[in-house]
Length: 221
Length: 326
Image 1: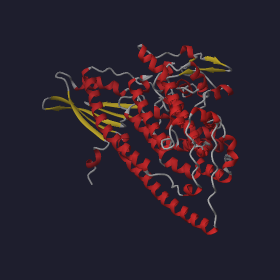
Image 2 (image 1 turned 60 degrees about the vertical axis):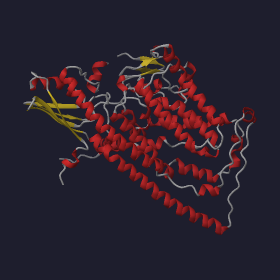
Image 3 (image 1 turned 120 degrees about the vertical axis):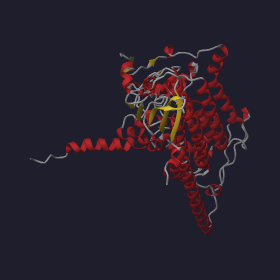
Image 4 (image 1 turned 45 degrees about the vertical axis):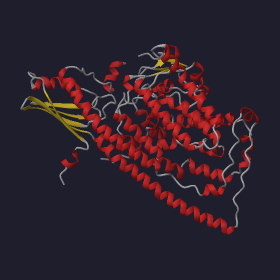
């Protein structure tokens, strides 16, 4: 099967036309500070820049990417920056709904198992002629009466309690939905953010500051 | 870096920590903003207490509490976005997604595990053994006192479990993962190794389910105070509040990169428990985390206690092994 069919899930590709007169080396010089971040290593070749990230800090503007290649090519309208970035965070977020659907399914199975064991216990109690314990009335303090708090609810019978099921599958379904939405938002947002970051850096609108990490920490103290 | 002496300890000798309330900045802005960020926390707390005290039985249910809890967190996320305490703690897509992954684990698999082998199972066994009549003395107390006692007993247990995690290596291995967070955000309390999340979740909170209203009131107090532990918002917290309750300032000191500072402020809700046992440090810190602020990936967070534990075992017992004679 062609892996390119699925690559879009965690690969972000794009291109930007360089300003007229900007050379490939000038463009890469401008982009280089983006890769002088904690946990990031990069190599420069002729018109190319390859980078890798390991445990980037939270405020690293490219923290969702694990690696990638930036190339300057000659296009029809001049020099063009083409980038190919890889993000495992996007892949895991794409797969997360499956995990939470799995948890929901597990809850359904546990619920069925609890239901069958509860009905068996109920039958056994019935055959022994046991009655459910009567719950005591919960008293109310005079201060609460004076302040107008509602009367306490009577405690549920043991019979009702025995019918309570195990964990609910609902949170699993909700989180599967949340992660599906997060993936769509992240896939669109991060693609736009990285394009805007490259565009601003190339034009000199955005100055990149090194993020604080272990090596900067000793200097800042 | 000299640090500041607090009792017998030097705080802030390894990483910057602001010690003392008088040194903590106040909210910047006009009188309306000052007013809102001064009175927001007490207003929400008292409004929630009044709600759970007077709500009819048809509304005073766990599902309502869950709904309020979610709405409160969404509101605080918006507050974090528009009024961040530190730009270096600003929520990103990756941070939000990571935090929500742990929140999701808490609502699903961890809840199921706790139901069968955690406090859920233990509480059910204890409740089955005792008769409700044995608790009449507790039931006959005023509702608010019941609620305070439930939340205090729970927090007292959490304090010692948390302190134990910082002082006993096997427990520290599980808890250390939570200390690799490098910023505070609303959902950061959920981030940690699942073993630790299971252990810290052990408590007697569910024991009081035969007192639904008192238990809901206790939960509301915990939510209206404990949620601010991990928040990227600055408040002009009233003096009485910060004396009694835990705050984001206290908890940022606990998460500081400074070792001595991290061994303080263990409670979740009532900071006066730390004051009682001499572990409270009033102050704040911005630089958080371990190993100088290294961010840990989820996969490492899942395996770290086991890999580190294995390394330690190998070091300890590997050295003791006899070396064959040449």
